Amino acid sequence: RLCAAEPARVALLLTDVVMPEMGAAALVAHLRARTPSLPVLLMSGYAESHAHAPEFDAPGVARIAKPFEPDALARRV
Image (cartoon, rainbow, N blue to C red; front, side, top):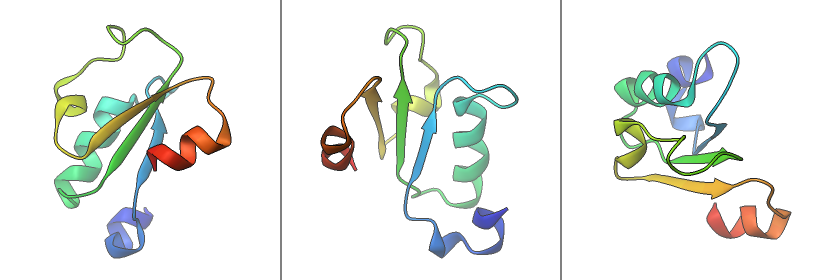
């Protein structure tokens, strides 16, 4: 809702790859349809091959493996 109402306020999408109702691929596609330049940082505890979708290979999409330390997250951001 925030991205739809005020896209300029959203500087980064940080999301888990696997979620209960909408996976990250669908979320990235939905939000980037409205804001194509939205940077994305995906987090996952699964092997790289499990977390693959065309949306994940787009420019501005990065990954971080779980578990991670706060300073590792800060570096990726």
